[in-house]
Image 1 (tube, each protein chain N blue to C red):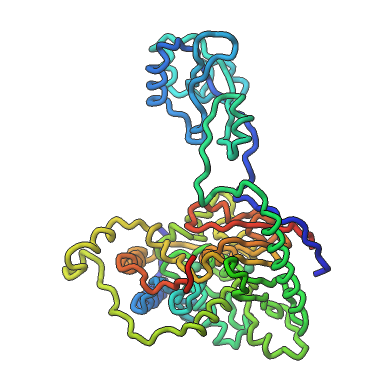
Image 2 (image 1 turned 135 degrees about the vertical axis):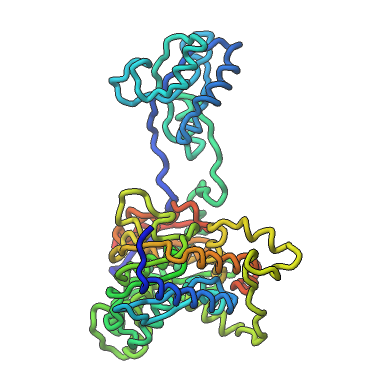
Length: 174
Length: 354
Ligand SMILES: [Zn+2]
Ligand SMILES: [Zn+2]
């Protein structure tokens, strides 16, 4: 188990608050914060139902919030100096996005057994470049999990037992 | 992007088909009447590794001997272990079995090392040593044939449009790397279009009349695929705005913490047994593009390939493979091989070199 600092815990609590807010909106409860120089510069939580878009994960919401705060100037947003704290391990898509942005590091809560892009399903032993699902992307980043994992799982469980009646559904027969 | 000619689309399999390789085993000969007992003991005490689950342990001898031949255990592949007694890879249980039944001297042999993917492979490899063949699970099955002529023509038509879109986007000084057309195969209707709008992110140079529009769209992650998925979602929201009915109250806390939870139990049943995989599967929900076909000028990267998995599309067709950034078999990586994903789409490429 990695040693987490008091600052790590503070940031992950903020991510958990985002996830709880998502649960209250009937979204899959995953939340995150982007941290620059030890201060939270952007927050995000899952909005796939609201935006009817399966790609609107917490990570994308936070990335867009940070970009918007810098008039869409990615260089000014300084992603390469940001650390992401997210309640659930980024999926393969988000891992690819974080890698494209050159994110500095990722701290996550629980693992993502279905879509994890940081090693849960993509690791193939020894291939460091494969370890965050971003092969072929700009670069890889270090990531560590397990911070407040039980709280993250508990939120997911609360969502899971209730089901997702608001999930975006196509308005047509398939 | 130079003018490109589209030939025949080819299916990109999840994994390259296995090649014929052999694994070393120790075999013995056994009387027909004694065989079933010995086979039972061998299977229970000396199971073959999972990778050799396709190997049948008993076969008829092919040299006129009446007795059957039985695979006792795997053998070391190093040729120095030429005798059973010297082979360090032989498990103790195998030695015990040989001693207990006073089996005749063991013979080295080889069996097909990989499970066959197709019936043709099964027929060819089975001749070496009997093996079983299981049809792949349906969502992992590879289409047996190349697309029909009509299918291929449809693919060419829309891929051509994606390429034209990519080229048209080149006005305005923006570097356009890719364009995407999402099509509903049932109606033949275009659902959404997307263009790469990352240009100018690192390369700061803009001129041309649509500068403002492009500047507003510019985003380091606005690859053509994400742009198109976004467009599909926006169009759906415009067509069918969210209802103003208030959301139901937030879900209750989990069982154990609170006695009110779930009332009489029908909710309790699933909660404690849900695995993390089941719960995280919820993260991959996003059905809006379910069943659509996605035509790309260039092969999607890993971010975009996974976005298409989340969107539950039916097929992805691309013109130009990307050895460096492609995630659908054009380079070293192929998302299709991640079998734990709960949705799989079929991938086709025109293999255009550009
Ligand atoms: Zn994600
Ligand atoms: Zn991409």
